Amino acid sequence: MTTELRETEQKFEARPGLVLPPLDDLPRVAQVSGPQDETLTAEYYDTNDLRLLQAGVTLRRREGGADAGWHLKLPEDSKVARDAAPSRREIQVPLSDGERTAGPIPDELVRLVRVHSRGLPLRPVARIQTRRHRTTLRGADGASLAEVVADEVAAQTLGSTTTLTRWDEVEVELTGGGPQLLKAASKRLRRGGLRPAAYSAKLERALADALPAPAEGRACAPRAGRKLTASSPAGDVVLAYVATQVERIKALDPAVRRDEPDAVHQMRVAARRLRAAFQAFPMVIPEAMTLHARDELRWLGQVLGEARDSEVLSERFRSELDSLPVMLSPSPVRTRITAHFAARQAAAQASIRQALDSRRYLALLDELDLLLSNGPLAPAASAPASAVVPHAIARTYKRTARRMRRAQRMQAGPARDTALHEARKAAKRSRYAAEAATPALGKQARRFAKRMKAVQSALGDHHDAVTAGIAARQVSVHAHLAGEDTFSFGLLADRAHRQATDSRRLAMAEWKRATSRKATKVTRR
Image 1 (cartoon, helix red, strand yellow):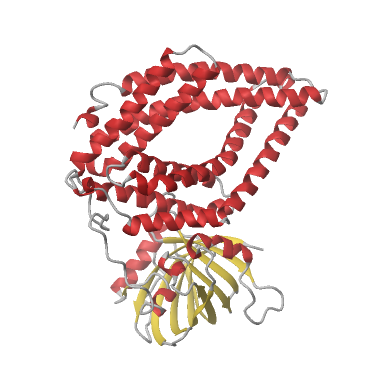
Image 2: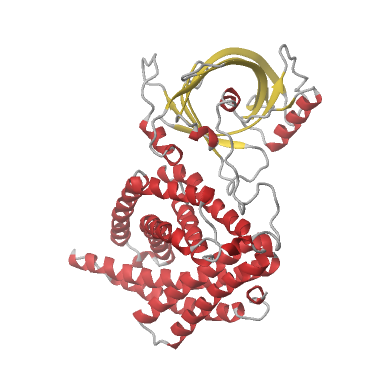
């Protein structure tokens, strides 16, 4: 049975024979047990060029200890990690009964690392044996709050050549306590003469000499740790945003494959942001270099959208039915809606799994990596962001204005609904362009992005309501053909129509605020 944990720890370099300082007076610690000794042997798997390790991912088969089995460690998504302590997600698959030698890597784990391995073979790259001395910090109720382990490590690289290394280290890992305890324990260990480890994982230290040297940066590549300003090259600003969205897609890939809450939506948003950046900044990244990637990102967004749209509609109808009197939301109505959307969601999830396992998706990732590493940039990429980026935002704003004016002139009906949806997509592109510029242009870009988001959200509510009305009528037809009462579906369709009207009016009000001189100042820099 697969289990998932969140690993939050601090690692320290240690000297042989280290004696840990007293830990029994740390916050919430009532007792200390141990040390308990155990021997752990782990074989680590990666591609020949160590793609997993370079992505901060480790895959191992461990023997010994209470958690013997296959372990996959994934970096925590920076958008959901809220505390300052470094964390990783760990997915464990136990060894099969009687498994004494390394069997094949579990298929589930192979799929979860495919975003990094890109289908290349995974082979053993190192064997690490650890003699562990485990001390447990417990609360007043005896529950474990944290473990402090002193490890004597012996590592052997595997491959055409073999390197043997030995070292000692100490890890503090939370098992029930909070960040305050981790902070206090780390401070105590540093005062005891330990210093933070240079490596976040044992495998990283064992293979330090085998890791490929960092590729030489391009002239306008975003520089790690360097703050973006209005004087920064436009290429730095745009590429930093593009790189963030590419990394978001990769980080969300395992969560989408595991059908985790909101993962599909977040990956879809990242794909849309990336596509919008390519569309908004052709003066930085030439359009010819991004046309194919834009088409492929549209495809990916459409695949993800099927599942997301079904999920949103299903939740919407359940909420609407909950607000109706019981006599107007009988069980057959709920059953009909559940069955209708369950089938659509199952088919959509199957399409997502097929897409993420496809050569087409992996080729898109390769293309994005290549574009970031050495894709040619336009001459304007070297100019200051303040001289280039506002013009790009202005272009997206003018496009949105044209579509809004067109929609405002149209009579009510499906054609206007379509026009409002097109205006929504343009407002979204304007918002994302401003978000990309915010690190460099600051308050003005942030204000414009906020206003465009308000317009986009109201138009999005309008589109969702229109779609809900269509879906309610479709389900009603199926119910009628089955001889079921359709009155409740008529109520749902009527509510959706009224919500669409209200959302359209709100969108027009938000657009008026978004077009104020103050809100659009960034487009006139």
